[in-house]
Structure formats: structure tokens, C-alpha cells
Length: 439
Ligand SMILES: Cc1cc2nc3c(=O)[nH]c(=O)nc-3n(C[C@H](O)[C@H](O)[C@H](O)COP(=O)(O)OP(=O)(O)OC[C@H]3O[C@@H](n4cnc5c(N)ncnc54)[C@H](O)[C@@H]3O)c2cc1C
Image 1: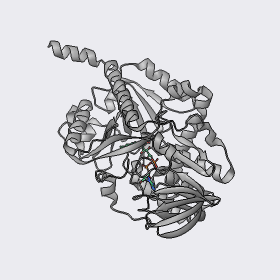
Image 2: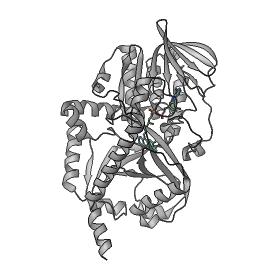
Image 3: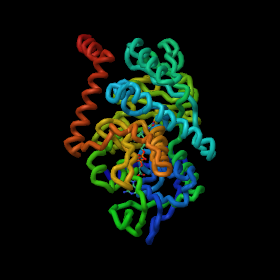
Image 4: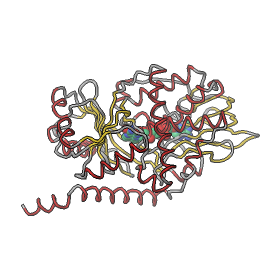
């Protein structure tokens, strides 16, 4: 799960260039609160603490660089909700509780929007997220829109004719338009959050993996290769990109890989098939998603696998096949960047926001829906630490069940394959396949 030589630089890293936001930790330090992990979960917590006037009492330790993990390599699409679907969530915790959780996820979304404005973070936000349906099942989609509306979320049902007039794909049926969602450059956002936290007094150290965490005196001792911190409280937000410094967390997290490409500038060619600036994703389990970039490129992402593939030629072939399936018109475009990332998942596909033991907090498990939920989790943890607020208890049902590493990995891969088969059959794959055979 650690940092590997194979983590390739993303388009965002190439655009933003290298940026050093803090030195490696050296010598002994003290802090009231130490945060482990400089992804959006750690940064969100640091900013929420800073916004409560505690900046000078907070230290954040990042193993590599700010945004090195999933937070700096994701698709950049932000909307309310979680990785776990809303009806699935309601089935697990009941409708009222699901409503409460969904409201928290919306708060996370609004917090991100508000931070971009407040701290003037230049991360190119563009309004609108669209979920297009891969399946010819308008009733199902209308029921989903009704559920979201009932939860106070102002999404709209868009019929197939309207969808296909904008996104010229033969694959698409109806869609759900979410005017509250948007897309952004996630690395620029993460770096902006880090700078805002620093400006409020947070001490930030990069190149500082916490390799050991243990109790000492009334607090905790965190050790990095060249330094140590004594802290009263610790927040664990390591995702799946470093040495996970707590055994319960280590046993419960799965790193699920996903992939992104950025095309050459396509200009008019792109405008002819993608007729709106919004971000788009489809409703399959292994969703395909994309967003047009300001300079006429297309950022395309998708696929999930438990066993990360690093082979660039193979990956490019797979991503091209996915893109051509939606837009045959773009089958021959050139890819100018291609990378993978690992998302932190727990078995229940929900964020874990809780006190692990006295003085130790955890914010992780955001899966593929982390841009809003990391901000939400940071806010809940900070409110608990500073004000004794207990809204984090809404996440009580989502603990840290072990995944049994290799076995869990295999089980999860089989689960994904099962769902992909289900999606393929639902989309009429079997019929299409039989027709091809009989031609
Ligand atoms: C390819 C891809 C596409 C995605 N697309 C989207 C999307 O469009 N929308 C969306 O909402 N979500 C998306 N996600 C999910 C989202 O990116 C993640 O859920 C979120 O970024 C997780 O944030 P995090 O802070 O928990 O983890 P990370 O961003 O991985 O950060 C963890 C950090 O902790 C550091 N660390 C680890 N161990 C230690 C240690 N011992 N000491 C010090 N530091 C340590 C790591 O170096 C890392 O920087 C995507 C994810 C991927 C991979």
C-alpha cells in the first residue's frame, strides 16, 4: 500500500509544477493536535481546526508531498453523497438516518465551495455534474430523482432526447442533472487548502512519514525517520498511500485502483460531441466519467481494480476502448497523460469518521467520493475536538471491519466483476452478444 516508484505524475502535477509546502520533520516538537496525512482528509481537518482559531496548535505530517495520494490524482468531480448509493444507505441505516448523513455530505460540498471563495484558491471550478444512465430505465431514474428531491437535493431529470442533443453518445439514455455539483483541479485545491492552513498557523511537514505511533505520558509520540512529535491528540488520515500507523486501520483499509487519462487539445472536435462544460459520469458500477478542460482537452477516468495495473500501453489500450465505447468519434485521439490512483475503501463503502480510542481520531474510507466527504469529515472531527460536538456519531454504524488483506482483495475483485457482469446484462449485453454471434 506504500508509495511506489510506479505512482506516475498526473496532468495536474505537470500543470502546477513541483511545489514544496513544508520541510521534512527534524528534531523534537510538540503540538496539541497532530494530523497524519496531507491528503484532503488531513488538510480538511487542519483547516477546520484553523478556522476555529487553533492553527498554531496543529501539526500536519505528510509522508511524501501535499496531494501525493488520491487527493491530487482524482477525477476532480464533486457532488453530494457517498460511494455507497443512497437507497443502499437507507436500507442499511433507515431513511431518517440516511437523510441526516446525506445532509452532512452536502455540507462538505458547500464547505469546499466556500473555501475556494474564501481563500481564493485558483482551481478552475466549473458548475454542474451530470449522471447519465447507461440503462434504458427511465422509471428507475425518476425514482432516484424523487428520492434525492425528497432529501432536499435539487436535482433534475433530463430525458434522453435532451441528453443526446448535448452529449452525442449512442450509449446514453436519460440523465440526472445536479446544479450543485462542480468540477475542479483537485491538486490545486489541495495545495490551496495547505497554504490557507499554513497562513492560519498550521505547521506542515512534507517528506515525513510517521513510522511509529504510541502512547507516552498522557499523550502520543509520533516518530518519523528524522524527528518526533509529542501530541495530546492524533488524527489519522493516511488513505492508502503510506505506512498506515495503526493496526486496526491497517487491517480495515483496501486500496482500490482507478485510472485517468488526459487527451491532446481537441478544440472543435470535442465541442461537436461534448456540448456542455459540466462533468459527466455514468451509472455503472465501474463508472466512466469525464470533464472537458478549459484548453479543449478531455479528462477521462474510470475502471476499478484491486490489483493496480501500471503498464502504460495496456492501460492506454483499455482507456481508449472505454472512451471509444461512449464516443466512437474520438477513438483515435492522442493521450498526453495517463495515471492511476488508489482510493481508500472499507467493506461498507462509507467514510469512517470516529474516535478509535481516547485521543485517536480517524477520517478515512472515502472511496471514489472523497472531494465532499473529506471536507465533511475534517469538519466533524474538528468540531468534536474543539467543541465536544457529537455529530460524528452519525457515522457510528460504519466501523473498521477487517478485510483480511489478500483474501479481502480477491473477494472485492470478484464483487466488482459480479457487478460489472450485472451491468453488462442489464444494458442488454447478452442480447447484443448473441446477435453478433448469429450475424
Ligand atoms: C483515480 C481516482 C479518481 C477519483 N475521482 C474522484 C472524483 O472525481 N470525485 C471524488 O469526490 N473523489 C474521487 N476520488 C476519491 C478521492 O480522491 C479520495 O477519496 C480522497 O482524495 C481521499 O483522500 P484522503 O485524504 O483520505 O487520502 P489521500 O489523498 O490518499 O491522502 C493520504 C495522504 O496521507 C499520506 N500518508 C499516508 N501514510 C502516512 C504516514 N504514515 N505518515 C504521513 N503521511 C502519510 C499519503 O502520502 C497521502 O498524501 C478519486 C480517487 C482516485 C484514485
